[in-house]
Image (cartoon, rainbow over all chains, first blue to last red; front, side, top):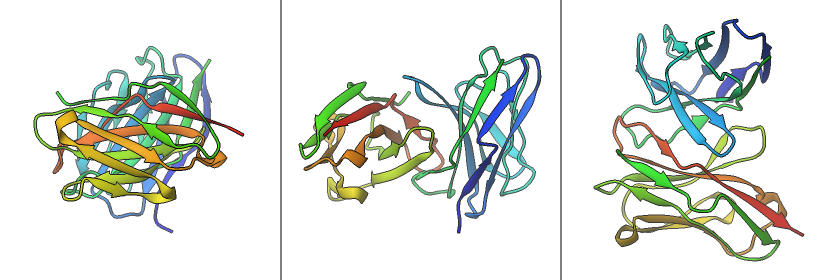
Length: 113
Length: 113
């Protein structure tokens, strides 16, 4: 079945460590996104990519990095520079040139202790 | 900048009662509008979308939404709520084309038996 796979579902890290969240899609979508979700805050855009080897900062990019070496993969690294990394992270993808109907993965809950 | 407002943080209804969730957007032209639903700890699922044409759009799970340009609103409705509808609901908009989705902060729906 086509879809978006995020792994792992739960992730625990010690403060000061970098951690990478995986996002893979087999929908053949050009665009991919990373959102952060905190209670009562809705979804805030971290980074997005419209094409391979290109990506743009979203609203809250500080302390995060991404890469887009393959069309189907868009990993997110949460660096030690991110002040409050504990959150629920959602990856999404959409077709390019359409009205941005986004399809979402099941999310990764990151807890930094 | 475009924005989406969901005035109600939390709504409680009885099973079988009607439901209306409010959404207002701020954008100069007609945006592309979406409603998503999220169960706890899960990703987002698209309920319905509006691009153009008929201002009353039908979605999955018996939901519908009406676009009102004069009120900059895109309210979600359901005639009779089921216990399984308990979830968080997000309204989102986009300028279309290559523009990103902007989300509201969500409305949490509780359904009483």
